[in-house]
Image 1 (cartoon, rainbow, N blue to C red):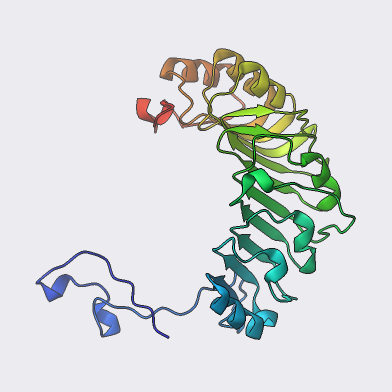
Image 2: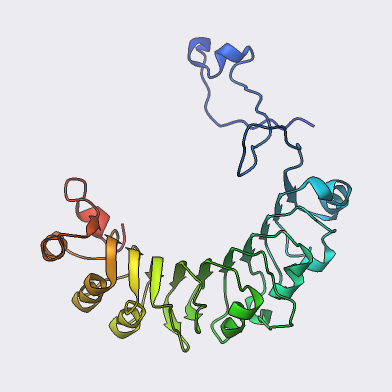
Length: 288
């Protein structure tokens, strides 16, 4: 099977066509994508696989032992419908409402990224069948209610990186002590949120939250703090100065250039973004 990908640009001058050196301008034949970690050794053409429908599912079953990176683009194919994938390490799934224990069938799964198609039905429950090899977890389109955040530490005990995204209110609980990187996005936050006392990275994109909520998150010590997309007030900026240890990203926070300059002067040990020589008002604008 050959896929031809064309853009909508045209010319009558053959001299400006791309890929003349390959012999068939403007076309260029590409090989399969390399594995995420590639040492130059041979690998299967099925290392990365995409599933769009049940026909693809049948093909996946035939090569499942060679698939390491799987993307499932339809919520009609739940985790339980996937074949045994003994070598799967990365899974991106447009999931209907599969609970996390459904993914424990994949013993080497290290990175799980879920885009929920039915947020209202999603619930995390500790069934006693943890995902022991999971290192990172991303869940998008979370419901605006208690969805079982408190069970995450038991279900994914080895996770060090979590990303949680909601279209509106983001419900949170206590995060596991082993986490090193947390990303949170939504309009506001709710629930008994509690961060570990130290994080390598904290990324916040909270569009309509309060000073108190953000300042509470910034009680932890954070090496790299990103507030890009969060409206930052003087109270939040002060909390960021107490919390951050190495770097603070203040792109698209609504700060004025004058406030940014004062913050940089008050915290000379911090790497403050955007850098002074590179920013303009549009970089700081919350609408930028």
